[in-house]
Image (tube, rainbow, N blue to C red; front, side, top):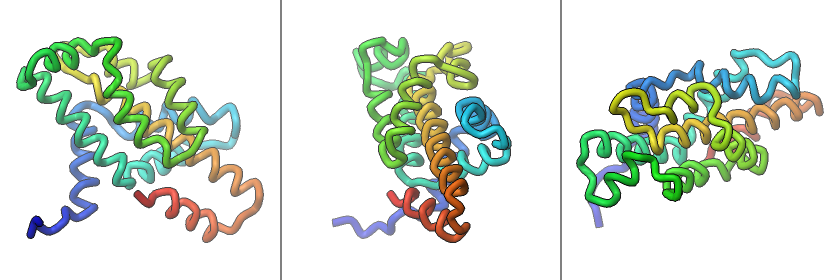
Length: 186
């Protein structure tokens, strides 16, 4: 049994956000994907709505943990610190290697079927910052990060879709916020 204190959630969240920034992923770039995915369903959608939704998703521990693990593996591959054949598999983003998608999609299930189907679309189509990460400029490895960004964008899209419906149903702000808090458990 460990005598260590659990890591405080705000420390984990900051570390995950810092890793995104370090790897060149800005909240606005993810929000743009969310906007592009959701504007067809709500013509009053704003970029600010999308930024708020991305930030809310990044408050979820499962997302933070996935980012920490995935980016660490990408960085270790860049430094050539993984054992073979894993080093080569991650470095080349081997087509049959699905662990990157498995980690990312595992953090999608909390936001429902809209998030799952949106993740599949984004993983296949590689839009915006996802495409930039997937093309690996220079010596960077983004085998896990591109899928993690898909996950964050898919979750934020699903969250927005549900909040828009809640507003259409004229639910009170307190009830919408309560539902949002329930979604972020985990």
